Amino acid sequence: MPNELKADIEGLMWRKLPWSALAHYALFTLIGLCPVYGSGRWAVWRIIVVAVGLAALTELLQSLVPGRHPQLRDVAIDLGGTATALFLRKLLPVLPATA
Picture 1 (cartoon, rainbow, N blue to C red):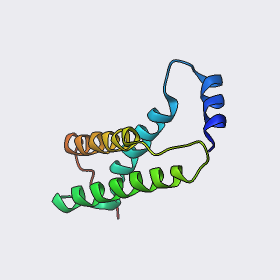
Picture 2 (cartoon, rainbow, N blue to C red; picture 1 turned 135 degrees about the vertical axis):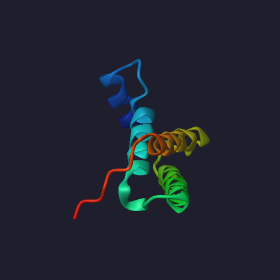
Picture 3 (tube, one colour; picture 1 turned 180 degrees about the vertical axis):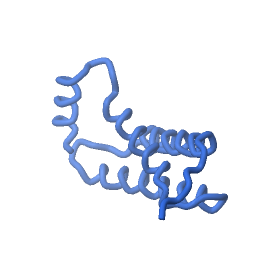
Picture 4 (tube, rainbow, N blue to C red; picture 1 turned 45 degrees about the vertical axis):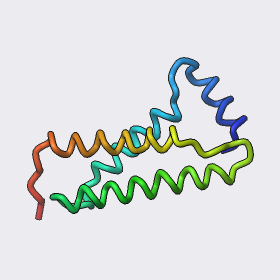
């Protein structure tokens, strides 16, 4: 979305919280927690590859919107959410598959 519209919406909602950054962090955490990656070491690599690809894609698409610019900080926020997901996958017990 154009930068002016994004700034207006965020300004109207809450002035003290960076909603866009929090949303990206939460979404990348949820993406990393999806069970489609399987389990084990290869699942971790699949999650990392998907996260890096999606983070790069979102920044590339953002560069095509007038008034918006890709930022390395945004990629770091996305990958922070992914790191949280990987941490939570280690902590949470594996649920048995249902038939």
